[in-house]
Length: 353
Length: 262
Ligand SMILES: Nc1ncnc2c1ncn2[C@@H]1O[C@H](COP(=O)(O)OP(=O)(O)OP(=O)(O)O)[C@@H](O)[C@H]1O
Ligand SMILES: [Mg+2]
Image (cartoon, rainbow over all chains, first blue to last red; front, top):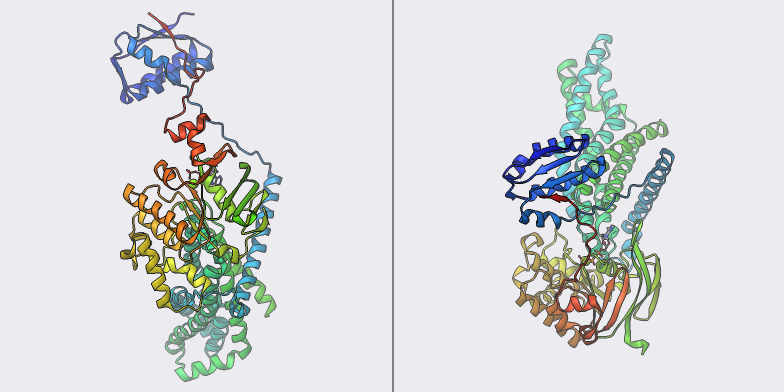
């Protein structure tokens, strides 16, 4: 078979070698190729890659590559061109069942670890005060401020707006059936039983949970957690317990106050649509809500707050890698805490029915 | 004789997921001795240190601290841990605390009822030692890499540990600071009798501070001996390490073979 001849230009650089390479490779896949380098005087690093790739192509296709009339410098250079040894990627082939099994074990382990973490936190925040290994790092006040107090505005605003909308929507219906007097009690019940604990904690998961996860994940990634361990300080005690106490205190308070904000928003509707006075409105709310509901609502808020803290701290402490690990820990902690809050809320609705 | 040994590592074997890094490591550290861990980059020196500190669990082997033996899988109790100080490769200061508060952490941990002013005095003394007193109220992010390392050293020696671990203490420091750090380590050893395990690549500081060393290669201890023995060793790896030569590589299999015609 007649070999094709391609004459190389005077210089082989990144700009002109790309098209040339395509042509040469095409030619080499069809038959032998002769590269005439009589005018080639200069080539840069892309020239190296050019010849290396052509050599590989020729090896693969089985057609011969011949270099003719090259000057001695370039010849010498090409004779000392090293074949790069890129190590093979060791990919683990897993079938569907293996992956499923592994992930199930992983999830089960995480859940177990979260429970252990919760246990440890409860221990350190109650009995641990009397333990001689207890250290005086504090930091709880700072966390209360950062995780609870600073979230106040957004929680109140969101809950108030949702309650306002809800009151507005239901007012049309109630007006149609002439049941305007039920607005206050119905709304109050719904707010304290459902809206305020659920919504407050979802907002907290997005705001405070993500901040916990990001902060602790960054510390794990930067070996700060390791340094804490090396100083004989338990990372759980130093990092998790203050946040745990802060969230335990803040969530029920925030949830209760957000509920009141919601009631106030609902009052606007009651006042303007049904002419109910302030005193009457709150009297009806008080009559409509059994006192035990406040307890249930508090329990709910505390449990949801724990879910947020434990999941975020767990995600943060188990982060390994670099900046991407921090991002991943933050995202997954928010997603998992919100979903588990909603699942837990369903469970509570049955339990407290 | 056994009383004299603060740390003893026997047949340690460890690695990361799916890859064993260290296969069989044994060595001991005597009281008041500076023991260096040498080896090329990526050979597992930091891994070994993390294992000795029990921050990573080893696969098998035992470690004896102050006469108390722990197996590979067991954790370390906090009393033993408080007798040791650690300086990590990148400092690992807590970024939300100031330099002084960072250095105070071990003090708060071990003496929670000590008044704050007293702790500040101790910390000031340690920071003075590492020439960093001016950064007392600064945050780690405001310091340079070398300054962070020194701050971390101040934290490591806050409690006057009996056993000090340093991962590349002088790498990345200017020669003057690096020498004063070496002198500081020597002084700590001489005045307090601190035993040290130090990872380093700096030939200068190795020559100044090293008593005995181990050289790691391919997950095994290639050589265990005094500095003098190392300098006189005929092993090619050690020769090139101490004389800063790069080992010659001879392979001509992996060149491209082009067909040239004229
Ligand atoms: N978290 C990790 N996961 C998986 N492999 C790791 C991890 N950390 C280190 N390794 C591997 O372990 C080996 C030893 O790493 P190590 O950090 O101990 O090296 P080193 O001797 O301290 O190097 P240097 O002198 O550059 O600090 C390296 O080959 C590295 O690829
Ligand atoms: Mg290292």
